[in-house]
Length: 176
Image (cartoon, rainbow, N blue to C red; front, side):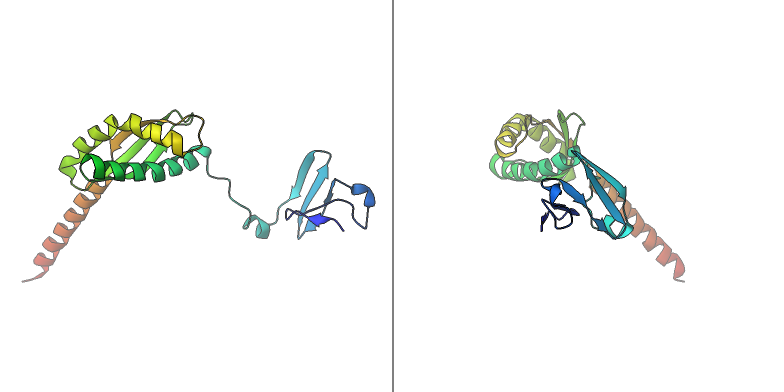
């Protein structure tokens, strides 16, 4: 009997048809039918149960490259903060352009008043980071890095403080 590839096809000769040597034979898996015709595969139907277990291809290459860059740049920024005496900051997100030429690196600072100094220092070190990334990542061309300050944490803290103050005012109005 032919071997199973795990994709719903048996390869090689089968007991039913020994002439199928090297060709894929269609197998019905629940309601799913895949047919191999020459070098072409045709999908006739997909049941909902097998669709849940299929790997998702929703992520674009830019998303995968951005996630890898975020991990690698996070390590480089941490080392730069330690070695160069930069203000304490961390990488919150990386957005890569569709053509993978540019990457916006969003950073947050521990002390918001030192954020602009940290971003300026990181932009001066961007070439050094890019060189280090070219050695550690398997990309044909490493994107040009542009560091930007991510003020979403500061805005969140401000909203939290306003809500706390509004809660304090509401509770003091309830008391006689």
